[in-house]
Each structure stands twice: as C-alpha cells, then as structure tokens.
Picture 1: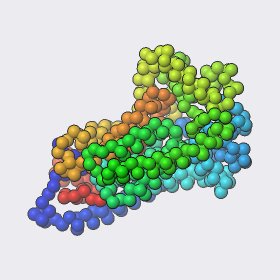
Picture 2: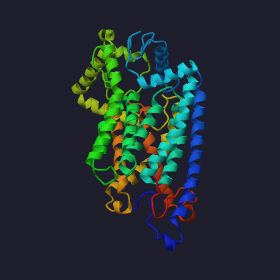
Picture 3: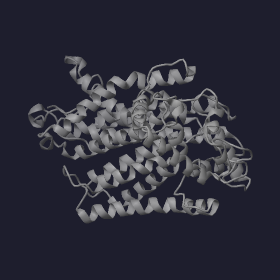
Length: 478
C-alpha cells in the first residue's frame, strides 16, 4: 500500500540524478517558502493582537481574559492570586484562588510590571511567539511523520488557521498551551527517532514543555502517563535506545515536571489547609457539565451567567475554593452514578458541540467565521489524512521502505487526539477546547492534501514544482 509523501525508490544513476545536488536546491527552496509562511503567520497574529487592542473587553469565546487581567493586577499589587470582589465561578472577594492557571497569570503580571497595564503588550508578545513557533513546530512534526513536503504544507495551514489567529491575541491560555503541546509531541518523537540526537537534552526540554503544558491546563496531566508509557514502549524499532536509556529519559522528564508542580502544591496547602495538587477547577466542570438541568442534551452555555452559581447549594458557597471544588466533584460523580444512562446520552450529545464546524445562531459573527474558515474548510482533508496514515500501522511492508520509524509517532498522535477529546466529551466541552487537537490535525490535513495532489494526472501531479517534494531515494533529514 503506498505511503503518503513517500514515492517508490528510483535508481538515481540511471535516472541521471544526483541525490545531493537534488536535495540542496530543494532544501533552500523549502527554507524560503517556510520563511514566507512564518512572516505571514506573524503578520496575521499581530493583526489579531492589535484588533483586540489595549483594553480587556468581553468578546466571543474569550471571557476568561477578564479573570486573568484581574489576577495579574492583584499579583502586582502584592495581594496574591485573589480577586477584589466575588468572582466567577464562586470565589469570594479577597480569598485565595487556584482556579486559574498560575503560569499564565505570572506571564501577564510580568508583562504588566515591565510595560505597565497595557494588555496590547501581552497580546503582541504572545502573537510573536505563536507566529514564529507554531508553524515551525508544525513543520517539524509534519516532516517527521510524512516528509518535508507535508511539513511545509502543514506549517502553511497552521499559519492561516483562523481559530489560532484569533486566540493568539486573546489573554488566555490557549496559545501558549497549544505551543507547549506541540513542543511535547515534537520532543517526544525526536527522542525516539534521532539516534545520537542528545536524548538527555531532549528529555530536559521535554520535562520543561510538560511542566508548561500542565501549569497552563492541568487537564494535560491525564495524558502524561500515556506519553511516558509510550516513551518506554519498545515496538516498531526506532532510535529510543535500550531499556536503561528509555528509563533515564522518562525519569528526567518526569522529575522536571514534578519539580514545576510542587511549589504550587505547597502554596495551595498553605492557602487552603488541604492537599490540592494544582488547580481547583475539575469539580466545577464535573458538577456543571453533568447537572440534571441538562437532561440528556448538553447545554454548552447557559443564557444567564448567574445560572451557574445558582446551581450550587447555597450552604456550600461559604466554603473556601478548594473545599467547594471537592464537594462539587463528589456531587458531579454522584450524578453519573445515579443516572448512568442519562450520562451516556449527555456525553454523546457533547460530541456534536466538541466537533462543531458549522455556524450557529447562538454564536457571534466572529465565532462563526473562525469556525467555518478553520476546521470547516480542513475537516475533509483531516479525515483523509487520518485514514491514509492509519494504513501505515497495518502495512507490513512499511519497515522495508523506512517507515517503521514513523509508526510509533503516529500512535502517539492518535493517543493524544483520542484521549484529549474523550476527556472533554465526558465532561465540559466547547469548540475552543478542541484547538490543541486541531493543531495536530492540521498535520494530517497536509498529508491528505499531499495525497490528493499526487493523484492528479501528468503535469499537475507536482503542483509545487519539486520544491516541496521528497527526494526520490531518501527521506531528507529535518
């Protein structure tokens, strides 16, 4: 079965080609194309940052930036992670909070400390980071999985993806979390694929990327054991080294991750008098997402924001944030235990919201446009790429064509997309929670596009003129 972006071998001397002379001009052409993609990516994200401006306003899908702005100002004033008034979701005025990302709050506080209270400064820094790093990381992952041509197309898709552009200017965790997830995946794949590629340095960087991802969104903790198990799993060959080396890689990454979490666990114990590993938001999500008010059909956003607080028993509102989160988690699990059938139907109804790619009357113009001109356009190519790449896992002849080193990375991609999606389908979900999965799916969309291009006849087969194609005798080192 043919593999995307991997044409059959050609006898180089007989074809009158020299692999080295073929590769260098093509590599230079790809570098120029990638540079243009990065420039466009930065320009689009800066446009989003300036559009959202120097004020923190209520915009569709970015309401959380009000909370981060307030928290950052309180941290600068020496009042810690707290709010001046009673705040969403049920935090009392002046009381400690662990509901929001500590890392993102500190980023925002640092920017405000340096530039003054100018949200646009934080937006610009964020847009620059996303504009530079997201296409590059996407290119790296796409190249490792399917070859350099797919990598460049994936970078172009990521640079123009409207959801990514919009959230690059929002003062929320989305952008930095997506970058952290992509870095985790690229580093993990590199540890397995690169023989002699400084695995210990990569393991250190992997630990830092894991720590950033978890400190931005604690839900990523669910994927961490899966990732570390994948690094230890010896199958399909690869350059992961022996058992001892794989174990060392895992221990290095895990130790750094734990070291980044521990200070916040200590802080939480001091603030609440009980063990709270990181954030206090799992209970709220479980309680609200499975409350009987939904029936068997999930309501993504209540019409009245006050309705969320009204659902909490009044006697519980006097509890501190950690105790309240624990109570809500227990009650949310009780809802599931008492009505498993309703919970199953409710979870199935969340699938529709999670994968929504069409406009809806409940969404604003910006949300509808972002949705349609991102996953709405690329979904067919994503499905084609996922389907075609799945054949690599079944193709027994793949190792003989040098694809065996790509099977385990594909397994990692499927594990991340499947587990991360399942977590949100079983609890709280909105289309924006799917964005980290979209960041991976654009790589598969690029693979689908490449496969369709290769189906075109004659002179239309290689629309890139060879600049993005793979060398006929070898896969170019990325």
